[in-house]
Image 1 (tube, rainbow, N blue to C red):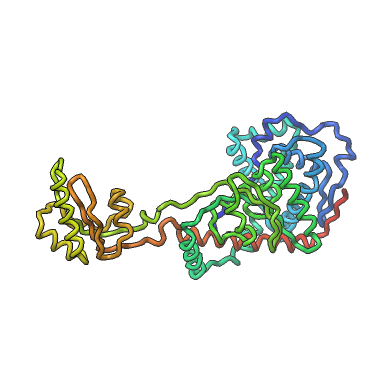
Image 2 (cartoon, rainbow, N blue to C red):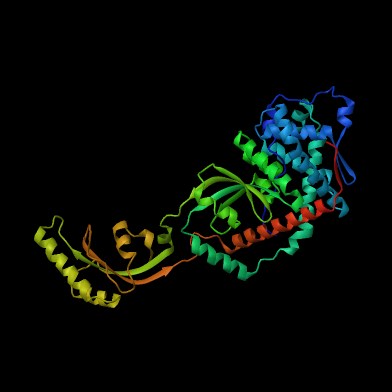
Amino acid sequence: MFKRKVSLALFLGVILLLPWAIANNAPAQGVLRIAAVVNEDVISAYDLAQRVRMVMVTSSLPDTAESRRRLTPQVLRNMIDEHLQAQEARRLNIRVTDEEVDAMMARLNRQNDLAPGELEALLERANVDVNSLRSKLRAENAWNKVIRQRLQRQVFIGDEEVEEELARLRAVRNLPRHRIAEIFLSVDTPDAENEVRDLAQRLLQQIQNGARFSALAREFSQSTSAAVGGDLGWVTKGQLAPELDSLLDGMTQNQVVGPVKTLSGYYILLLLDRRTPTAAQNAATTVSLTQLVLPLSANPSPAELQAQQATGLQVRSQVRSCDDMRQAAQGIDAPQSGDIRSIGLDRLPPTIRDAVAPLRIGETTEPIRVAEGLLLATLCSRTEDDTAGLPSREQITNRLGNQRFDLLVQRYMRDLRRTAFVDIRG
């Protein structure tokens, strides 16, 4: 099974610290009014209002009439999807036990540094129905079971695919890497494109006005990265769709761009960080050397230094291999000479490393001044580890599997939406 983090909630810690509450004397007609019908399920205006208020708090949006007006259609769209997911779980006879929900609530307490049961008590004191949170968690857990049961077996990553990805990563490993977060909104039908684009533009405006990207991603993004606030981790050139890939080099840290249209929908991207690889290739190179050290006194005179320099240059001109260097060392009083076998290039002193790095097999460095005298080094062998700095085969398999799994989940949701009866009452 491919590894994946699954979020269980919307980081409710902030909610618990703010003094808002649902009015106890709300008119009965406001509570019972229908906001939408999703097949056989009803979304009440009361549930929608609670959810909108929750999103505003977790996203750092001001609790104003304008914020509520902008958020309401976005939140309702998300709640409709949740009802479709819960209905699919019921159709497949997939159930979530009370004990599983209890475990999820306990995990929420731990995530928010609360004592067992403290979250429930705080919600009750804020006049928030704890059952509404439990229902949300139950639906999320049920959907996770659905997609694991129905889609996991359809994902297979072969050895050839892993090798192709390794080859691609080798080719780009010296290029900058970008840590990206995303909000993805799918376009299921051509008729829905204008609506989805408008939603993406509203989300972008809210981010620009100070809303937290991660909170909006958790609530609205239709990618499975929503579970971790949209964080895709580190990506290299070629991993994203071409329309997104072309934007990365021009972005600055913490910049948000979008909406960007692709074949599957609209994206909003946030650049969290960028890394430019250093000369890490040295750490992946192992060399074997034969060295000749021409000794010098502690404070050599210019004549002594010149004489040994001339000797070193003469030796270098005659050496064509490590065997040649060994023979040359036997005829010179150079007791510190000898072989250095299988040493990482990065472990050599900088002056020697820089002189050895460009050598081809059998070539010798110029005389290098060291503490003991003048050193000449002949390169006997070089081994390159072409996997250094690259993810393991298991990591690549998991990432490719997750990408394929995401596509299957998106198609699954698209099919559920297309066959659903949804009546939005306004």
